[in-house]
Length: 448
Image (tube, rainbow, N blue to C red):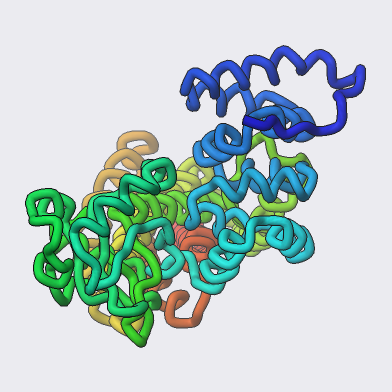
């Protein structure tokens, strides 16, 4: 197989030559996990050199195992013709995802140098959102015409064995022109007489999904049927591709991972430490810069009650406890709402029902937590009024936190704002401001 070559490495890059050689050996022996780790340790230019030193098939196999953000960065550092050769060998759904993340100019240049068939597939798949059947499907499948015979199919499989062995074939599909009319189980094919027409042994009117069907609906379909995959058709019934169960499960896990990263302040896509420093910094600052403003708003409540805090210095001990405990309660409510939204168990317009469910829990938990912290305050300072202030404040703030935590994701979703990004900062600001106000306000009335 031909090797893809970049320009010779400069003397400055020589120390990483051993790493490049190690990656080639690991990929050749199929140790992809170790190869990915070794690749991550190299500089961006050396990563591109390591990938380009492999055959297109091996390079594509390696890129299938690399985190998407890193894979896109590597492709950006490859010469256009080299990137095109590698992407020709990548599975159709992954290829479309990678190209979609490139700059428009770079993507266009790479597609122009890909083989016409693979380029056409890439352009088609890039038109779909990643969370639809069209965005999840692969276009590598085997189909035959309904008037063909079993002999025709067996001869075709033998003649194209080298190509088909790279496909994940569980079923063949039967079409009338381009329109899907049946599914052909391979076992039935092998046990049938050679002259039998396919229409006589196919499973007619198979279950299929529209290319516009959402990830949630495809997932529901596969959960109710023991299919390894399901054909994808367009509005005219023409066969376009296949959505595999593994692809749906991976897409769901990626969606959950993305939501988790967003909730922790990592926005703008997945982050790995091999990405450029400025890109990583900008992704984090886009969230931190907003969060610091929200924290200043919360801190302003303390500044307003500065005299009260100086008079009853013991309150300073309980402020972070009340803030943290209320935040924990609110985050639990956020997590449940986010999960129910993803499962379709709650709609964005059901805020009132969600609030009623959450306030019921908030009353019970708030009373219990308030009683605990009130007892601790009285045992520490021997002051029943101090215990009442901090206990009542925590009880009330817990109810506020679960109310906002349960409802805010629904409101944001209905407003078209990603709740995974905005729910956390908003909840923190609300619980901090309310908690500080309740403690210091009550203290001003009852302790000073």
